[in-house]
Amino acid sequence: MRKRHTPKDRLITVALHVALAAGLFFAAFPIYWMLSSSFKSNTEIFALPPTILPKAFTLEAYAAILGDPVKLRFFFNSYFVAGVVTVLTVLIALLAAYGFSRFNFRGKGSLNTLIISTQTIPPITLLIPFFGLVVSYGIFDTYVALILTYLVFTLPYAILLMTGYLNTLPRDLDEAVAVDGGTSWTALWRVIVPISLPGIVATSVYTFLLCWNEFLFALTLTKSTSMRTVPIGIQLLMGQHAFEWNQMMAMSVLGSLPLLLIYLVAQRFFLAGMTAGSVK
Figure 1: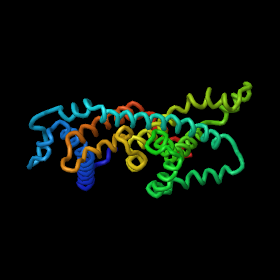
Figure 2 (figure 1 turned 60 degrees about the vertical axis):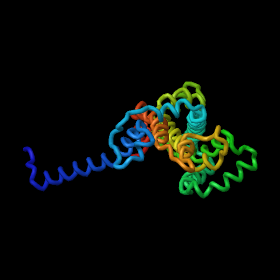
Figure 3 (figure 1 turned 90 degrees about the vertical axis):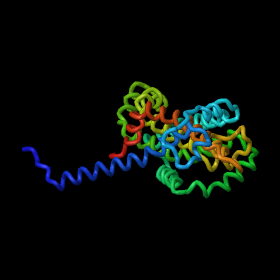
Figure 4 (figure 1 turned 45 degrees about the vertical axis):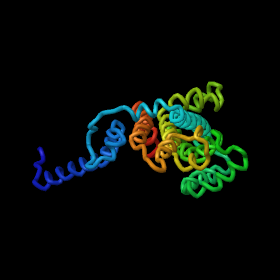
């Protein structure tokens, strides 16, 4: 028998939809404003009252970004650093997670606790120690400094994420490889890795986004314009006497689109990898 909806139920439903619509507007309007402002002139952005739609649609901000080799260098730096860190993080995290998931060794519990405890340390408290280390080793203002620093922050969570995923895979797979005369190395690369694609994709997307969006260490550990990343490049558009808001918005759009495409393509694997092991 179909349940009748009382006025109270309908009121709750309407209130829920209104709350969801308000939340959607709150989340989507900044994105729309960024996109709209990127097609305005800098003069129109400062006009009062502000215009919701561009009065004079222009691509001058995008032309200024794409036509400037210095600004394009920001994108190259972000892609290069984030890409290298992602590859190294996934590789190291996969090996470490396989060890935690499949083997028992002395100090395993303590090491696992240490990895988890690193997530409780605010990154800003490590800024000065990292700066001192980078300068003392002579790698200040280099890709090596950013890559090594980012690895410190991406590896712990990546290891935990991959370990949780590998724990959901039956040990019978490893035993079957051993029966056929294969080693643990064979089991990892021939069997475990191919069926761990959701976990690998989730770890890769998380790592890439974290590196791409990082601002504080990229600002502190680099000084030359040729080493700056996109978040720093956006900040550099804030001059002493003028703010290039349209170029800032255009660079933000250009920086966001690749990340959005990556997430849309890998969304199915990302969600599967992030939720794997949550019940177990």
